[in-house]
Amino acid sequence: MYKIGYRIKLPADENMQEIFLSRYSTLFNTFELKITNDILCASSMENIIYSTKFFNINNYSFHLFKDAFYNDEAYSKTMELLMLLSRLNYKQNLILVTHCLEDHLLNIDLINELFKFNNYTFCIENIEVYEGVFEYLEKLKSLVERLNCYICLDIGHLLFSAKKCNIKPSDVIEYISLDSWWKQKIKEIHLHDFNNQKCHLNIGTGELNFQDITPILNDNIPIILETRIKDLSKDGIEEFKYTKERLIKYGNTGNF
Image (spheres, one colour):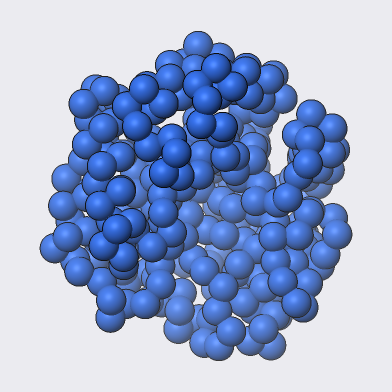
């Protein structure tokens, strides 16, 4: 059974966090929480962890500041989060996601300090690129190897990049599906639609073809829908059902 949910931004108020997660847990079985300054405090994080346990949401991830490896302030905030989780004695194998940007800006020693908190699965997400998509994926692969971490594969970014580079979606999907390395390293999927101008469109409103992406899907890998939804209990459910139906119709049963 596919684990499908949304990237969410919780309110700062802790009572509202509980209300949100209570409702959310009746609709979806996973989520990715966008870390922001207003929830980066002990009481808020403790409340979020408690609420996920109470409402039986067992699979979820945190999206760190996207430049956590590249910006001093974002790095410090990420370290603050990891130290906080450590003090809260939070030991679930949580997925933490950040971005792969410019290789020359990396300080590997500092990044390894983050990775000392080994209760968590660090995933690096691919971004949109407008040239050299295969070269970028090789750079991403090399970085993951150097850091001994994992991949959050953003399929929307991937196929949008392929389009901008005049590459067939099937070619870039084949590049990944035929390399067993990716199978071992992908721990989370981001999914959204795209067109020639932009991505993060609602699913079903762009050029995303589920038959194209089936070779790199696996029902053991959480799928996070990164789209703009006004009401999760209405249009969110509609998009969820639309996605789930097509995953079942075209989806991989675990071969990838």
